[in-house]
Every structure is written in C-alpha cells, then in structure tokens.
Length: 405
Image (cartoon, rainbow, N blue to C red; front, side, top):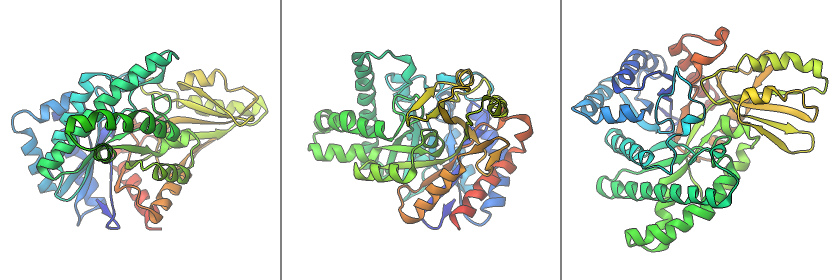
C-alpha cells in the first residue's frame, strides 16, 4: 500500500510456507483478502512476493502468470518488491547457511534472479520501480582466509552482478521499467556491514563497471557506473544492521556520501540483552536465549566487549557455550522477532532501531520500498505464536502507527 504518498509498505510473503507456485498462490488466497480488508480496504495493497526457484519456473509455465495478474487486479493488489535471497526450501526443514546456496559465483543464481526480474517486470504497475533483494554474494565461513580464494569469489560474483545490471538496463530500454537488485548484508555474509558494502562498491563493482560493462554496452565509463548504481542497490534489513551495532543515521549518511542507493528497507527486529558481570545473574538470560535456540535458521550472535571490540559467533549454540565470558557486555542475535513487541522477559528487541529508521524516513527518502520481514512465526517459542493473519496485520499496523506519529 502507498503510505503518505511516498512509500510502498507491505510484508514479505516468505512468512508463508510453500515452495511450489500452487502452494504460494494458495497461501496468498488464504491470507491476502483478510489482511487487505483490515489494513487497506479502499486502496491498492502491495505485496512483497517470495518465490523459490521452483515456484518461479512454474509461474512462467502455461498461463499461470496471466492468471496471477488477473487475480491481483480483482483483489486490488500489486507486487512492487520480491525476495530473491532464499533459492530453495525455506520452511519446515534445516536451512542454516544453505540459505546462501547457490551463491553468486554460480550460473543458477544468475538465471534464477533473471527469471524473478522477468516476472516482476510483468507484474509492476506503471510508474512504479521494482526491487529484488538477494544474498550478500556468499557466506564467509565457506572460504579460507586466503586472499586469492576470496578475490576469485568476488570477481566471479561481481561479473554476474554486472550481468544483471546489463539485463535490467535492457529491460528498461525496451519496456521503460526501472528495477534494481538489492544486496542484503547480514552477519557472516561475504558482505555483512556498511563498511563492507562501501568497500565492495569501490574495490569491485565500480571498477568492474568501468572496465567491462562500458565495453560490453559500448558506453562511456561514467554511463556504465550510472547503470550499475541504478540497478545494483542495497537492501537495508534493520535487524541485520542492528545486530552489527550500526546506527541507522550513520549508515544512511555513509551510503549517501558514497552514492550508494538503498533499494529496500526490510523492517525487522533482533534480540538483545545486556550481560551483568555476575555469572549467576546471567543464568536467566542464558535460559531466555536458549528458548530461541532452534534448528531451522542461522541465529548469528555478535557480542560487544568491554574493550570496545566485538566477538562474532556463527550461530546461537556456539554463543551459548561462551555466555559466561566476563569481558562481554551485550549480546545481539539474528532472530527476527515480532516488531510490535519491545521485550521478551529478560531479553529485549531492537525495536528502537526500527523507530530510528522510520523517523529518518520522515526527514530523507532514502528509498520508497518498505517491507516487514518477520519469517520466524513457526519457530518462535510456543507461547509467542499467534494467528498468522492477525500477526501480519499487527506488524503492518504498528509501522503505520509509527510513521503517522
């Protein structure tokens, strides 16, 4: 839905289990009518669509895409953004670091992403730009510290991203539709924070555009850079940047200074807790975190130390083994929790970071795509699980209330 004539706001449908197109469509038909009626009864309602590789293939078969477009028109709904990060299964199975597979070194990731953009170009209403969020190239723990190995990963991934930029530039020329791929930094991703985004643009993406894209498209280097900056942007997931202890205003300023565009903001909250010096006093905090220790998704932890540094753990079980480290002052963990809840007993949510972001959006429009992304309803502790449609409505309504002051 359009908020304040400036922003498209919805939720990401990766919340709904389903890896085939029939399963995805059934979920949309089961939940969207009620959600739209309660949140946006008199105006079009936007959708943040998530399609697996399989679902994207099936949607382009027979007349499924035309039928979906007809359904969207009847429902007064539209698609403006998609989640192209998880390639395969995302619910009711162990996902963990497989969420990054296949990574951006592979042809299958390129083909999948092009397929999603082909679909999005058909679904976008006239005059609206479209974005697709994606993996931060790959996963750091798959590689050694050998600079040559990492350079090879960056080089191949960048070649593929620049290919996407050229693909989107051609769609724009043919159809007049502007779309962007939004790299989504997250802890332990090959790109995981604002500085690594800036480094990637300056060391890899921009030079590659000047040297290769300019030649491939027969355009001046400045034009090639312009094409890359328009079509390769950043997905700012509030949870991810909060886990990294990054201040939204600082990140926005840095990106603006380096002319890096934010294509989408995913509105999400992480878990955090201050850790007292007394080990006995930490026990209830440890038990509270342990209640969120589940086997489906990665729940990276970044610990803030008293010397001003940070210690990273690739998942919650590893962190729990080290919770009695006396030098640790605070934990933050990558677990998307409901954004309308401020505290969970001994734990708090990073809800304040969302408020900061929404307040900044009143002062500067860094993007026009907003998407609530709490996908963990099925793996939350049982006492926190509620009716799915009601929970989605509460989240979107909470954002609306915050944006309206």
